[in-house]
Image (cartoon, rainbow over all chains, first blue to last red; front, side, top):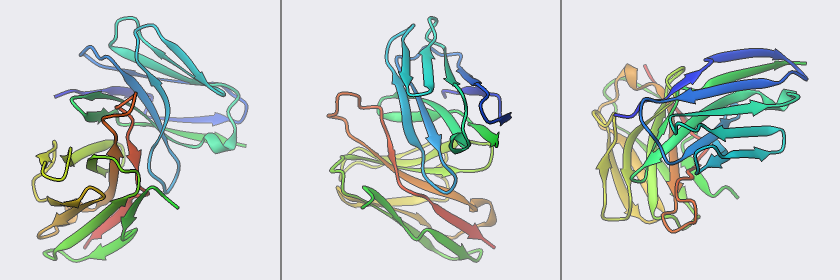
Length: 109
Length: 115
């Protein structure tokens, strides 16, 4: 089945630093989704991408749909303590979503 | 009020016991899903249902069963719990009629421990 390779697995950064994480696959996809899971809660959609090359922002978050349609990147600028959590990439086929293993972000004040 | 609710939020049980996890939603979505989350393994699909009469196995359905009692309710059962089913379980919904049908809306999760 589909497999999404998400990296890095974890990040420990200082408040104010920028963050970059990515997701790759051997398959071509028509969508890339990025979710965030706060501690003790379910994942929530951050950004959805539907077109190769698309660059979309949501506040300090920016995500890009790779031109090859096999990868996607999520950047967080000027990190703050509430950015802590697990970030998942995902895509969907026939109504079912496949998720990456997640990037756990820790922000030190 | 939360759109997707799960009960219980935490449960500790013993090996061999039957357990039911319940999910309710007020979003009016036809599609509902059950996922399992283990540390470092992301979210893995257990079962999914596209409407009340539709039930489908996901990638890790062995040891689990589900029931779609109504559009708003989707229950997950462990007929005979075993320790390696200790995990965080999430219910989710999606709306196939929405402009972006890929978005999933998750409940708060149920933490299950099998001793």
